Amino acid sequence: EGLRMRSSRCLWMLALVAVASCAPRGEITIAPEAASVGTVREVFLATSRGATDPTERFGSDRAAQMSFAHYNISIPPDRESGSIAYPDGDKIDPQKDFLTVDEKTYPDSAAFKAELGRALRRSGKSEQAVVFVHGFNNNYAEGLYRAAQMTYDLNVASTLVHFSWPSLANPLGYLHDRDSTLFSRDALETLLADVDAAGASDIVLIAHSMGSLIAMESLRQMALQGKSRTLAKISMVILISPDIDVDVFRSQMAAIPKPPQPFVIFGSPQDRALQLSARITGMRERLGNLSSTKQIDDLPVVYLDVAAFKDGSNHFALATSPDLLAIIQQLSNAAGWLESDRRRTDNPITGILLRTQDATRIILSPFGAIRTQ
Image (cartoon, rainbow, N blue to C red; front, side):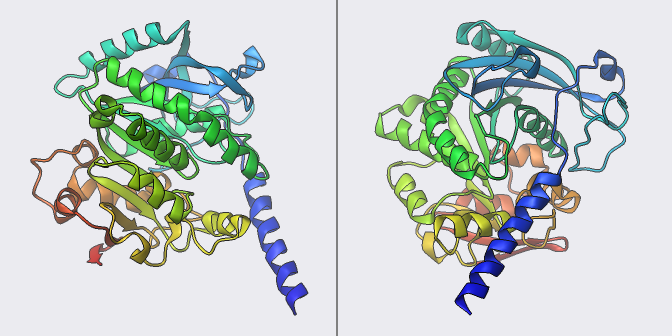
């Protein structure tokens, strides 16, 4: 009986890996003409990946020094909210495909900060920066395009900075990727300091899946090292399906005297990717697929349960579910919500986010939001 259960478990894991392996991988395609067809989203990028081949830009190798780049991404008009389509071979369709209008790299962090500062000042009334950290099994292009797509679909107008860490981009590379997150925590901490130095009024830190571990480790390091200036600039943290051990998360939060507020976690007990992650690590649950928030009830976080919104694996519904994207927009004008507008009092979710002192669980559904403890 035990052998059958172990065999069944292994087959289930292999099935998930097979599904992940069949998904088409993203790649950057340069098409300047797409600027006249799609909506252009500007993305600043910092990476701890190594440039192994100029034609491939940055790969999965780990680099001791960060590299910096800038992209203008065309968001095609003929698409469903939450979706990303790549060109089919040499066939490019600016009406349907995500394309890169132009790209450039910077020789050093000083040049990167100078242009980022100019972009922040151009942004108008808000000089806020949103820093997005991708998750497990992402190549360079996939993280870049996901950052552009998600913030566009959520109507986030703030200056966008993407942190790209050296994921192996292989569903079998879980341990490699987890080591890469620890390798990259110093780089993300440096990037946050650079964004602060560039003149950002405040910073919203968004991380997905295993990228949440980098985000939390960087926040913990800043707190322990007394880097209060940059830490104080972080006005909101959003962890999407965080692949973090709950005990580790509690220790990270304990090291941060004043965690940024609001501090929001999007999770689902039906997250199949995190179910697999929990099995790999020998645990029952991860932070992003808690069936109950009892383990974190004493922490100043809000847990948004998005199990009702399906996105295949239930691992990235905030970015990929059209229904959830629509709900978030309706709740509070997503741009204003992510910008932590503390004057906004016209919807109950934002009020909970701003007032909570202890963990609050909110179950979101296509029909509304239900607050539970």
